[in-house]
Length: 290
Length: 116
Image 1 (cartoon, rainbow over the protein chains, first blue to last red):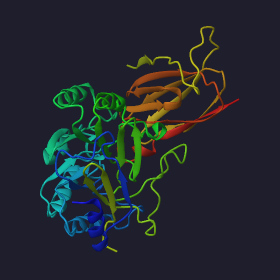
Image 2 (tube, rainbow over the protein chains, first blue to last red; image 1 turned 135 degrees about the vertical axis):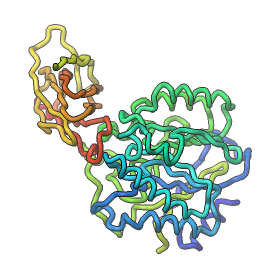
Image 3 (cartoon, rainbow over the protein chains, first blue to last red; image 1 turned 30 degrees about the vertical axis):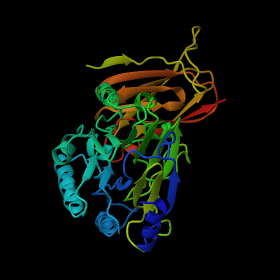
Image 4 (cartoon, helix red, strand yellow; image 1 turned 120 degrees about the vertical axis):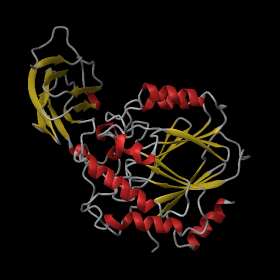
């Protein structure tokens, strides 16, 4: 599939948002190892959130599910990069939210769906409830020649990957050649985006150090509730919008301000389509068709 | 029984300065951490004057992090955690909880105002 074709059909479907195209694997030549494919990234759905940042929070997830189901070309799979549910200190309510979230997303037509935790899901019970509903908090899978690594930087409430997971990551990477295509999925930024807002991972630099010898690595993450693109050396990091409420732009105030009140004209919410080949095309999708 | 925990005195970054061998006496400021605030929320210091934060919590573990000074500490309930800095430049610097503690954690922060 050509990327231009993909943008065309998204436009025809009335779904095309801002499109970001970049060298997905900057050191990779045009000849791809596997077929091009695309997937959908949901992030920060915060099921259970109620507040002025999204008066329609109760229905936003259902609308987004319908939007993704309406795509002319089905994605190969779907990933949720954390904060599936909004936090609660009540373990029973946490499980009720996870159950309801699971029921809503079960309507997705694509059944290959991968779930990752955010701190709202996992930091208060070290991922216990998340594992009951969604399975492991860190894992790998392979798809059409691309190796995906999902890292958990939230089950530790201090936002650490931890030595055990870093050892696991190192062992996994050792099984791959340095020119293999590798996609890392995570919730929090692995790099120090805004340390004074705690937009970082305490030991994320150790993960980046392990990844650095690999020439074709890209990271997709969430947590900051907005599109953002950053390079650490040759490794690209792409943050996704939240589905449920926006956050202030990185570093625009000394202390992180609360989420801004809902403003429909900004339409900052949505999901994203990631088309992968020798290059990446990220197309931001609004919650629903206009 | 309270245990007194002495956090490491860290050599700071550009904002932080560090330990003084011929140290001036350190001012102390007590800060209580609780969901989801620090009390007091604003603390004042002077350039070149060591300041010791005396940190306590009575509800759960919290964190205390000041990236500009390169310091962080756990605040464990019923313990006293002490962290000393020596500011080397004036300005406002954020401190915040870096251990997720619930709905409101993201708002748990304060400001150190350093005067010349």
